[in-house]
Image (cartoon, rainbow, N blue to C red):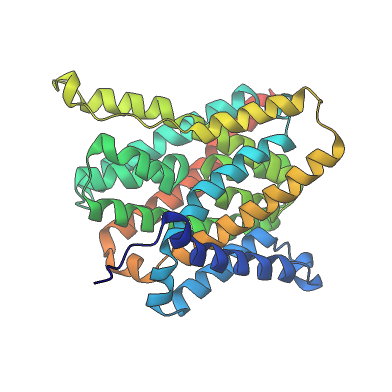
Length: 343
């Protein structure tokens, strides 16, 4: 009797990677249309929008068969793209964010997570792990922060699923909301980039929202976001220490370190040395753009509107409240920091 064997991880990832690549290619072609260029719609924005539409219109079986590849794209390819993004920036560029930018990121992180802890359990009646996971995802770096925080708070699988759906969903709203607000408020690109990078949920969404306004805005947004991502490690250490009060050391959960953030800094250091030839930098930029487009297409394809609906009112209400705080409260924190910097 011939036994059926499970496909190898590489083979299992192929359908999803091809689907995400096809959406990314269509988005890259569509972004060249004059009307879209005039309205600031970048290939990255279009990739996640087209992926979101396709993922919710395609048959469930097709999306399920693509799950392995989509997960690979929105996790590993995204992180590879962010690492390569470091070659676009130098430490001199990172210095432009300055201590004020670090302080803004820290203030946004602490206030958002504290608000989630307070309102999630007391006002919206969520379990403590669910509230902490939604808070971490909103405060730091979206789904990656949710997954990194889960071993520390020991959330249930349904808590993780709801938190990921909530932060990705509201982060996607922010990705389109911020460029529109920027045009309405006529924000300078530097101010917009710091605001977007310090408050939008996912790294991919920050990249897309930044490019929707301009290259300078995207650079500053990514720098601010990566500073925020780098805060994930000390955040997890602090949260682990808080949860571990009275717990034996052997029973404590491990802490996940965001290595892709360190890779981003390392390549920014290489670029700062000015040792790479222009053709190599151009090739790296093209590869980076392709990786990010595929990752954002996969993020859209994997986002299920039905999961948002199934989560019910309470986590969505918390997610909406945190988004409002990130937009308004985060904007106020940025405005105060900017005013202090000018004094």
